[in-house]
Amino acid sequence: MSSITASDQASAKATPKAKVIQPAWVRALHWTNAFAMVLMIMSGWKIYNASPLFDFTFSDSITLGGWLGGALLWHFAAMWLLMVNGLIYLALGLATGRFRKKLLPITPEGVLADTKAALTGKLSHEDLTKYNYVQKLLYAGIIVVGILIVLSGLAIWKPVQLQYLTAMFGGYEAARYVHFFCMAAIVAFMVVHVVLALLVPKSLRAMIIGR
Amino acid sequence: MGRLRNLLIPGVDKTLLLKDAVKTMPDLTRRRFISGGASLGALTLLTGCDVTDQFSAEEMLKQVSKFNDGVQAWMFNPDALAPTFPESAITKPFPFNAYYSLDEAPEIEAKDWKLEVRGLVENKKSWTLEELYKLPQVKQVTRHICVEGWSAIGSWTGTPLRDFLQIVGADTRAKYVWFQCADKDGYNSPLDMRSALHAQTQMTFKFGDEILPRAYGFPMKIRVPTKLGFKNPKYVISMEVTNDYKGGFWEDQGYNSFSGS
Image (spheres, each protein chain N blue to C red):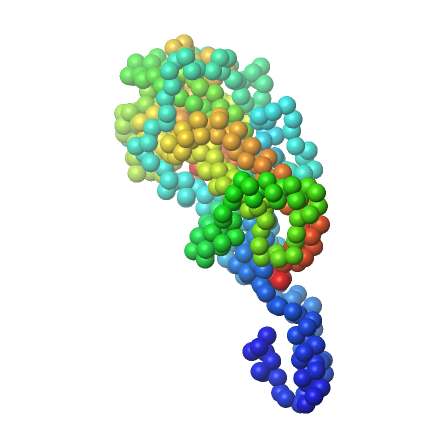
């Protein structure tokens, strides 16, 4: 009997608190979103190449679809995955209070203080369940950009049927630029996001196994 | 964790118990392989592909594109007009765009040309340009949006297609109006009937108040401001009212068939 008690205590020490940092629904939606985003961005670059807004095109080696028609098929298929997944995320984020608890409040003082701490290497990653102010700002910001990229995409896709939406973006041509800059913001976010996840591997583990 | 601990039998070493349990389990990798294969098969069934075919992304994308045709038909509001613009907004020069250069564009002699009318119509007579020019015309300044992404505002003048369909006694319950063109390699494109009957869908004879130049589709183009540019055929030589989906030059290569704006 005594051996049981001893091993029980040992295992209790080995896993101090099996606290779930990222619940299963967040993880499932996160990776689905990541997959859909990569498909949307790579096919989107191929579509951009057909009529570039700026003086550059994306290398074919990092695009999806092979030609404009193929890229459009991918883009208009992956959009359903992105939109349905995104809507579930917004609904659950609001319903469970996750957005409110994790992302609010965002104060300018908090953001300034944590930016300073981050740049001087003094930002704590002890408790992964709590986001620092820089994280709060970026995560809230990327949700807004995510909503904008879907809306500007719809405005480009349906400038007649959804003409009021298109007009809100300043017309068809302006909506293309909004769509492009939202993509640029998401790609920039992804680069920082992935680098930081690799620098703090336990945050990556939490997004895979939850703890 | 607490609930798990309650399940354990007192007096039994947990580590040993776990080792025994693992031995009785089937090979995990084999299980994964089988379940993976089963779900792929299920997906093939769901998407309606031939089960004997290898699962292909291409087939799935085609099915989604058909689904998107349905979604767009559902979104299409026959009363929603494409935004119109002042003459000052017209793009100059309006771009020439085709899968060939301007030198290769069809050169049609007005006197040799006739519009052939076929299919589910009461009057199958062919129309000369002179006859067509006598029909009432309206002007529209709308945005042409190319599948490539660029857009340009143009001024098109001609006869509303729905007026012409009425004149020839077309069965407007048919599904499509299918256009054939004089472009090299034989351009053609189907137009769904609801879009064909839209107030702004036009048999165009003039661009910018001038007779339609060769670059923009002389002698006649079909202007559909609720569709992408490739669904606006130029150098039209025949129209057929039909219930059959006859495909199209670009549609057959993978551009979405509805391609509504």
